[in-house]
Length: 123
Image (cartoon, rainbow, N blue to C red; front, side):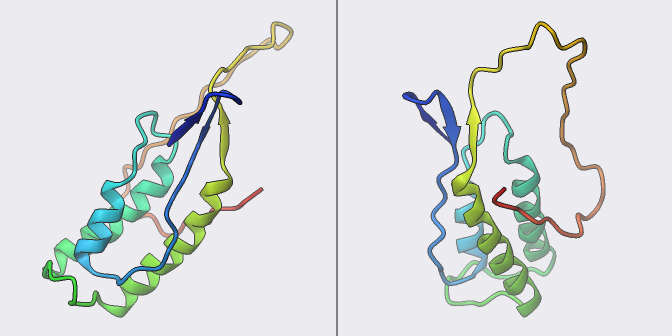
């Protein structure tokens, strides 16, 4: 996450260049997420579940070792969808409308064993 001080907004800037897909590359890309406010939690959890699968399969660290095809496909699909996050703009300052009688706060958590899919839209 980055902060645009002129617009007072948080922006997401992700490198979406294609890379070799290995356990080391996937871990490296996940580690690059800087999201102290957990605004990207639903996306990051999908990436971490893919990494968890690699650990369970005991995939080695070497960059040249390719991951299994199903994980490769899931990772490429996630990375493709993540390019839409570069269009995300979140106002930093939230001001409440005094005429609005109710305010709702929504949080995200995942207590399931697996998340089936996530589609990131650019709307």
